[in-house]
Image 1 (cartoon, one colour):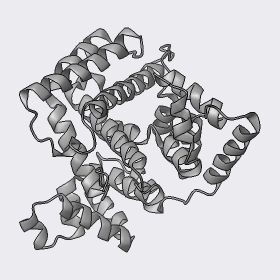
Image 2 (image 1 turned 135 degrees about the horizontal axis):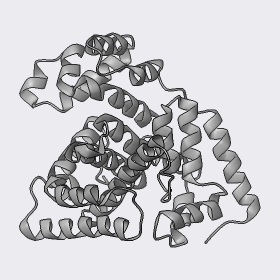
Image 3 (image 1 turned 120 degrees about the vertical axis):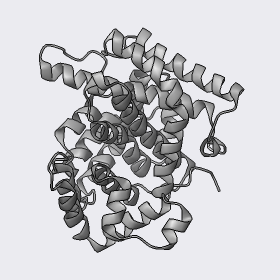
Image 4 (image 1 turned 180 degrees about the vertical axis):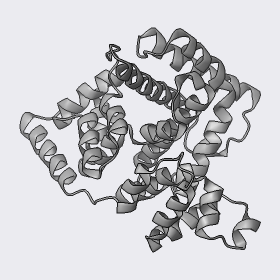
Length: 326
């Protein structure tokens, strides 16, 4: 079917704008949690107080924690404070946001599920990059949130233009830049613009919006310290994006979440694919990370792949997202 004519583009763009204008507001507790300072000695108390203000949210946090505990522990029942302690208070704001996003963008189709897998996975990989390469000086939870939300505009496209993704794919895009071009031909707008608009409506922190807006930019300024910080954060998201795409290409949804330890042959194939994806990002100049950081990432990520998959599985299971087509 190919690209659409200009009148159809205008219609889709208007529909998306209208949908963004009527986005359900995230629970007020989300913005308050995101604004908390994790270094505050009363941080856990503040998290507990805010979460307990919303009874429905309290139940969902406890349920999420229970699904991520051993059955014997879960049967005894846990309270909100125990759930927060179990999950980690620094992760609660990201969890609350994730639960809200699942409400807004339920995984009803395989495409929805694949996008959720990718988004969670990019968040998890970004967090691991921040942990494994401390020289990046990134907060792991901020890196996770940025990765989780980087493609939020694509969720909105899936909601408002169901046939859009298939028509975009028909244009045969092969890299991030041609994806944006394909989206503009079909929709008259791209997911970067859509996502940043939605994040602004939701009151997402500007440091995260910066990633949503720039995650397909590959020539960021490095003039000031702030410029270099942004370039580092964007580059980490871009590297995580490439690794996730390689993983999803290697492991289909029927066996992806059954992997606990790779068999030797499978591990070699997955490692080769992820290493190739990372090298491609570097060779194309799609990263502004230093040579030292690039080397550290290439050396560290292969050994963390099973952990990345397991953590992604844990999060998606907790959010009640079934990645396997029933």
